[in-house]
Image 1 (spheres, one colour):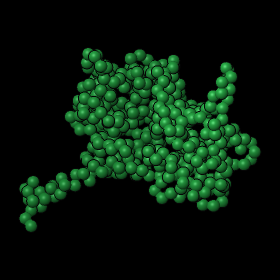
Image 2: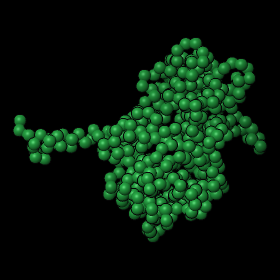
Image 3: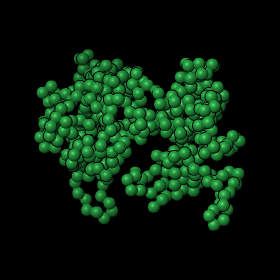
Image 4: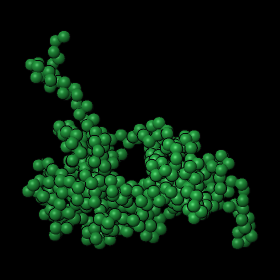
Length: 441
């Protein structure tokens, strides 16, 4: 059943599931602001409707597009979305370099340290461009974009989602910066919003403790249980974890060799040469890890060795290429990975009136552990936090996590600051005072 939401301007609706398609995407539309009508087949006049350029991942994305359209109408710069799309196409042919075509070319050719953008990153950039940037700047010549225009855009864009606004601004600033470097813009970069590319993290990450982890492990299906402690103690990303194969587990050296990862992308037209599509889902791509440093040997804590050995004997597919965490049948070449909502990993708890049983998936496991808002990626955060508490240096954290810059690893060293009082108490012991006793003043 289609879910509609009525608004003061335009409407958004959630599309129903269709055969072979993922449900839950959102469609946005509005009637012509100047009252244009068309005649239906029966001769009845009906308002002209303007639809979004595509369906949106979330309701907020659809509403943000409507807000951008409303702003264009208020500013007196509105033209029908279909005409803007056609004008963008004609701009390329006319020789007038406008932001939209230039940004499309920038995205297609963008490389980081000589490597093409990862599929998920490219998808995210495309979403930010289509939803937040193109409605305002897509049809403008590069040289016409000014600092006041960007300041005004920043003030009204994605106000309810500051993280999305910061990411959109950061992308806009980077694209314009490239244009400056190539002398396509002869002035300085017009994107000058101080602190515009930063935002406060809305999801506060709280590492799981041993009791919570143990509870979640007992609830998971038996062949999925080891995913949680390996993620929490070896700090692996979900895509790295689900692509692990028998040949990647070296119990003699006590290391996990991270060499590949699985990601789900929308655009598979321009994959890196060292990536390949997985037969289980057209948008599931197997390729190198997120960064060059992602190819690494991760040490296995001794308390996981026996669990890994048992899992290899019972649940791992045969052969060197057998998946460590396999689906019921097949492998990544001919069966689903764990991204689909129908897999046992993501299975939710029992429905109303249904008899409870063990073996529900991640959602039920985190609920029973008292952490219903826990993200799976928070287990990786837990592993890196525990490594910092155990005394890992910044370089060791970077090697463990597969980070290329210290900035990403520094966030996990906050755990050390949280133990400053414990450090002070141990210093008192070194000074000759009993533990838990303050020295005399």
